[in-house]
Amino acid sequence: MTDEQSDQDRVESRAHLLPEEAAVGSDDPEAQAAAILTESDIRTADQNAAPDTVLERRTSDQTVAAVEPPD
Image (tube, rainbow, N blue to C red):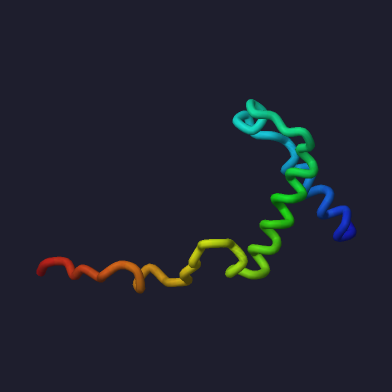
């Protein structure tokens, strides 16, 4: 499968509107899906590309203060 075919498969799989999307309609679901997937690919490649977001990579032991159980 070529990258172009893979991209087309991704677009087609995303172009099926969810019920809430279908309720408001879309002039071109495939173009909408392609735009969403393109933006997603950019954000995946450059995690600082999302506007006004800060992504933190921490483990759970860095985010929660450890509480020792009573003896």
